Image (cartoon, rainbow, N blue to C red; front, side, top):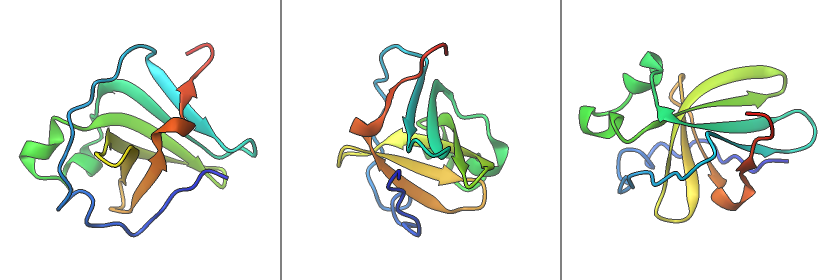
Length: 109
């Protein structure tokens, strides 16, 4: 199962935000093999609900993403964190972290 750690509300308010240096492919994916996954897109986040949760200076650093959990698709924005994880912020304000080494290029993306 993808290790998604929730209730980390401080990662976006206190963590140093790291500009993304995301080289090729346009879509990365971490999949648990049972239908849950996180997809990262190499494009700016345009999710107004998520962006409204961030300070203006943080918004430009966020990238677009989506997460499938228990059959439900969740929009999110993400960025790389200094500790080697991907920080995820969901529309409802929940946060998560996924180790960056779990992501692979998505085939056919």
